[in-house]
Image 1 (cartoon, rainbow, N blue to C red):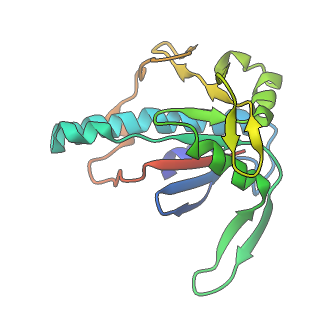
Image 2: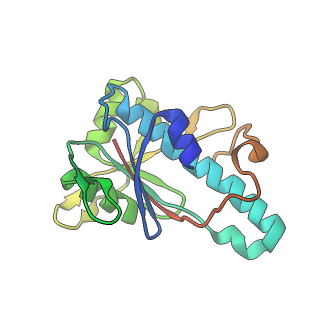
Length: 190
C-alpha cells in the first residue's frame, strides 16, 4: 500500500495499531487533493481484495472475511515533528478526528466521505463518484451529520452504487507474496 501511496503522491503519515493514516495536499499543497485521496482509497479497496483472494488460496476460505473500511475528510491540519527516540512528522486537529470518525462509522468494504470532501469532488466534476448515505450518522463530538459514500467502480472504471468488480489489476504486480497484508483499518484524509 505504501508503494501505491508513493505513486499517487499521497503522504503516508503513520500506521497506528491497525490504522493507516495518509494525506494528500501535505506537506506540499495540491489543488486535486480530494480527487487523489479518493482514487487512493479506491485503490486500497481493490488491492485488499486481491490480497484476500491470494490469502484464501494459500490459507483457506476463512481469510475471505478480511475487509477494510475507509473514512475521508478534507480540511486544515496542524503539522509538526514530534521529538524523542523516534522523531516523526505528525498531523493534528479536527480534520484528523473527522477522518477517523468517517472510518469508524463506514462499515466494512465502504469509503465514507464528509460533506466537505463531497463538495470538493463535485467541484472537480466528480459528482458521479458520490452517493448520499441514507439517514444521518451520529459523529462523536459533532452530532448527526449527512455523509456520503464514494461509489465503487465497475469493471469498466465507471462508478456504481453497489457491488462492482475489480477491473483489470494484476495481483502479482501489486502484491508480491512476501508482502505483509495484515492492516485492516484505514484513515485517509485530504
